[in-house]
Amino acid sequence: MELFPIKSVSGELKVPCSKSEAQRAILIGALQGQSIRILMDEPSTDVLSVIELLKAAGFGIVMDTQGISFLSFPEKKSQLTLNVNESGFAFRSLATISLHWAETVILEAQRSLLRRDFTELVEHLTLIGIDVHSLENKQFCISGQLSAGEYTLQAEDSSQSISGIFIALANLPEISKITIKSAVSFPYLQLTVDILRKFGYSVTQSGATYMFKGKKSLENFSYRIGGDWSSAAVWFAAAALKGEICLSGLNLDSYQPDKIILDVIQQAGAKVMVHGCKIGVCKPSKELQPFSLDLMNCPDLFPVLAIFACGISGTSHFYSTKRLKNKESDRITSILDMLDVFGVSYQSTVDSISIFGVGKINGGSVKVHGDHRLIMAATLATCVCDSLIYLTDESDVKKSYISFFEHWNNNTTSLDYFY
Image (cartoon, rainbow, N blue to C red; front, side):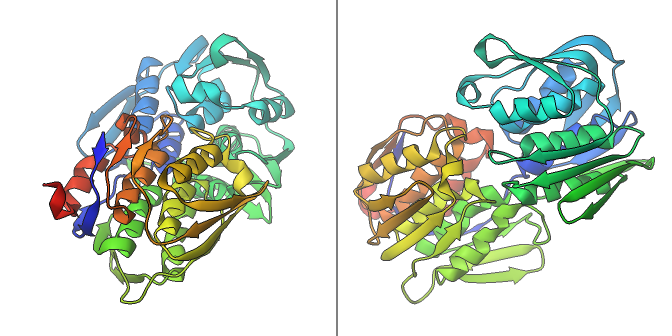
């Protein structure tokens, strides 16, 4: 795919729903045993994969232009096979949640998910008494009885499996107490707890200790998914570099950690305006300034912000980068390879990366390794480049943002000499 250099960015659009929030709400909804409604805008392929696997498992789900409705729920089975496609969250969380639906569960993964390391997931399952056996092609066979109790868990790689444990144990009638040590992406655990509470679950928190005390029944319940701050990041960065944008659908009170993007672009000097449910960002009259960011809780921002840093003269710093390896791609290597193509200098240590931006980059052909965040980052690079950029494949952007390129073409203007 050819990407043309961008002269300006302008317009107004509604961002798609958060896949992190949608997947959690859908899986919690599947445990309710009564009709509920989940409202969401433009669900991504990761979200659609969760819906389809639940349908295949026997759930009566009807989808329309505004969201989905759970109409019926299957009886518990002796064995169930669930194909999560490429969703890391679905794989890690369903390892526990699915034991509410079957005595033995086979979890299947595809494509980029086959490259992921799930050692920590196995450790978490073993600690709560679940049997897990690794089969060929990254299939997991999971069995055992979910048991309430007191557990201490550590998450140095991902908090996703702990979110699954939260959801699974919250649905037991007995009280469970879970203490978390050294958790990365801690705000995502808060997001899980927030959604559980909105579904009627009693969850109390004291520091890093959570207590789950059952739930109350909800009649005619509906839940609306907020906009995706991760997808909004590319637009805010593009506007700060090349013009202005106004986004709707985002919740400033969201627990999504990627909303820190607003702090980052303000740190760089961009102007941010909030008008009710709309957020606008525009390029400053002065030059953008280098910035610093700890990625411990927001690793998905790194690809886009690495390119944003290239468009700023000066040195920008990223910390807690070692946790970027076990994503859809090894994002450290992938982004540094992209910077090499673009002719951008950098310095990398075990857990940090400094990017020496000069305000512009070279064009060239970049590999995106089936990673939706890399596709968005490479597209953003057209805002700081005056020659063509070639993508090896753009289709995987749909993992989180199905209409991304349609929105990009409608809200950007290419340099005149490419027409």
